[in-house]
Image (tube, rainbow, N blue to C red; front, side):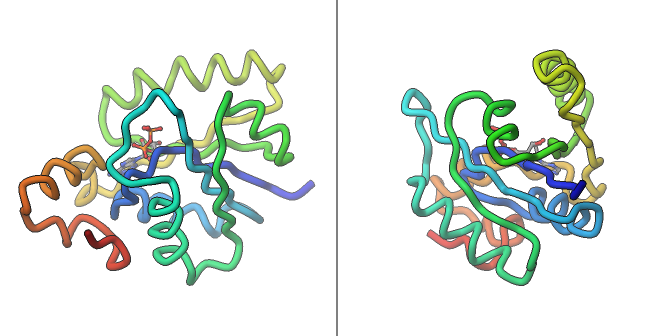
Length: 153
Ligand code: ADP
């Protein structure tokens, strides 16, 4: 059975933190599906098309990556894509607390078929988040060291 992982997120926009997790996960899986959530109730800074474009451009060097959009439950999307792993990044204790219950619920909902794999953020990327990048962008600050080159406003 091939190892297919889904890496879900808003990627609004993709940051060097996301990139770090993806780059390190590439050798671990046969295929990684980067899944961009879109939720009509949620306000995003970048449109779905723009978020996809940033991801495609930033990740084009990797051969075993697909970029797809999804809505609804992550477990349903994983089932549809025959993915047996869910990939998440951990930056701090708050991420851990939040991710722990979600991973446990996802295991319960899939009768143990979906395993969540956590990668710890690299130390020098642990402070980066899409929300901080958005804030810096909105005040015309220098965000370029925090995102891949493809992300420009
Ligand atoms: P979500 O809305 O699902 O949190 P994000 O796009 O913010 O979507 O994050 C997607 C995934 O990337 C999450 O697992 C998150 O913990 C991880 N992540 C975000 N920033 C970093 C970072 N700087 N280092 C490691 N992982 C990160």
